[in-house]
Length: 255
Image 1: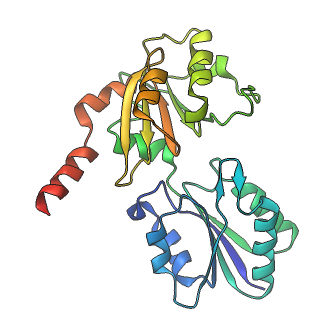
Image 2: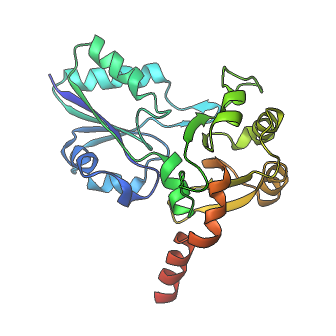
């Protein structure tokens, strides 16, 4: 019997994977990797490793989840070390728990290797702390990936009224609905909001506005997924501590 490592690859930058996550890549016989995993990470695999792309594009699933589950079990039963490489953290909107459940039911040994999630890393690279002693003492993450504009049970009222900072995953396509819901439940229309596209990577792009202006700004700037939405007064800190753009500029000047 082999073993499966369900590994969080981090938010995009190859440097942000954990030491243990990197070791799991290096020792794997088989690596099943997602669309948002940095391809540079795969260069650390041993030459004999089998690399299997199992990413899913929005509305276009290359390999359905049931197929992924079967591949994990199939290769582990052949005695192979399998690394299931997921963007971000496997337990934060990553379906890692579902895969772990399948492995447990099949009697396959496995380990969960946490990764840095985009809800914290992307704002950090944009110069936005998700908590701040003066601007925000509470922080929540939620999905913004809605089906046909339906609520899907998300407690927008509670999020709007009770949480200082919101990190919303997969929500750019539903930005008008999200901002509408937050303002509906009395979140101030002038609340700062940031959209962080391809956070932590060399393609990172950040736009800011308010709940009442961000939809127009996002359309003008053509912001697309993958992108994080950060809502809260902490977004104001970007004006002072945005550092990644300066870092990138310094790199360009040295070339």
